[in-house]
Image 1 (spheres, rainbow, N blue to C red):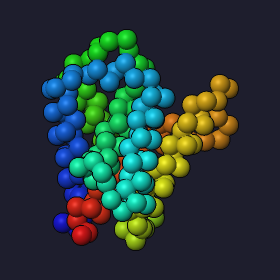
Image 2 (tube, helix red, strand yellow; image 1 turned 135 degrees about the vertical axis):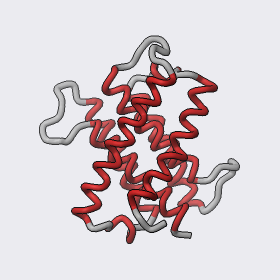
Image 3 (cartoon, one colour; image 1 turned 180 degrees about the horizontal axis):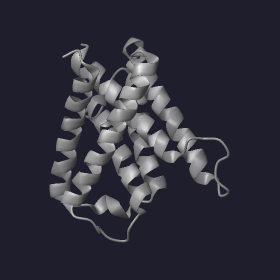
Length: 180
């Protein structure tokens, strides 16, 4: 499978499947997370990927694949939380959560396709470690924006950073899955 759109859709389908299974088990308990907490969850996952990449091994029986999936799913959760705001309880149904998941996965795909056109698939010549570093950079930018009480002056916004984190994680999964 060489087509980037098909590879993206394949990876997102795997992520969505896990998201749906966790919805079954936990419901939408994540609705209580404030966006800053979502950013921290993504940070934890990216830091673990970098640690495994740097050390060359993992002490826990999960590699970087599951962490990239987590970054994608938390990135979509972050976008949902930015749209709806956080709640004090799980206030949406699993079906509503999946509809929102699909909405943001589609937006991420559309953004990736547009950027992929302009950058001529440059990501294919990058190393997975670079995606990790770019995700960490986006996280630090997001944390900085979240701490600004007066807002940003010229940045794209937190939502754009979540989208980029999702897409870099998708690239990592495509490389892991298809370019062994």
